[in-house]
Image (tube, rainbow, N blue to C red; front, side, top):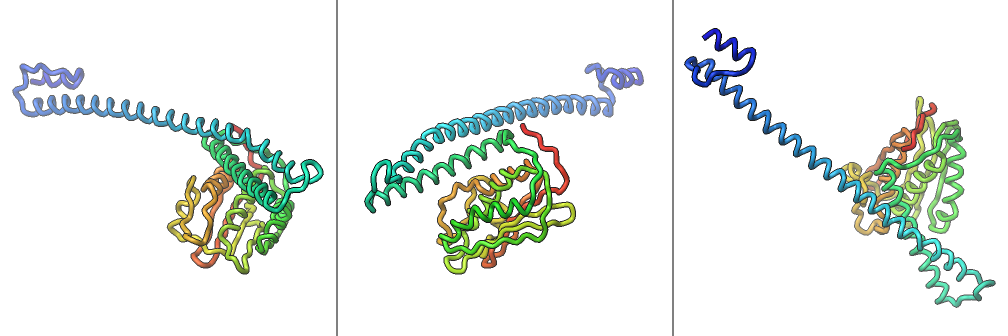
Length: 294
């Protein structure tokens, strides 16, 4: 008996013809069941890994396909925009009548919207593929806000939206000014869709908090519910505001903002209550961050 138990403890082998003791018999069958379970679990893990790899490959091909399609859509846009601008030049092609000018303006507006959509898709694909490039240069927080303010002031005046800026303190930071401008552009364009028809107001600005620089865009629009705030940074998500907003956007703007901010080493957040407006704000470190392009 002792010899058989010693053999099992060192080799895990048992003579099936020698199982007179219930303890050894139970131990033997437990060992056999454990081996079978281990094999099943191992096979399941291998199958799961294989399926995950297939899903990742499919997702990557989908992203690459969307990127290719977006590039193909982008190619004819520039010539169309070029000819639209030519049509508007009286000294080149003559003066258009009112009906013709309205038609050309509508083409211009539609193509510009398509250009923005294609650019958003391309940027989103770069973020997904981890191919978004950023630069690293010394910039001034006040200059960033002033640049954005001057760029959007004319269109806000046309739309009857009051644009205000609030710069509490100018700070020097190391980041990508073009990407920060892109974030501001998306946030302000988004805010313009939510502000009321009367007494519309958008505030932009910057301030510092400990070792962080905070940029913000605040509006006096309809606000965002707590439930929807959980989803607004997801791709293609659009807030259901019924008649409060024209749903002309792609639903990519906020997802792009979050992707860029993460690439810059920062974070974007939102504060909002229904009927009390919305504030999007993003933080960047005052310290130099080493940016690595994929």
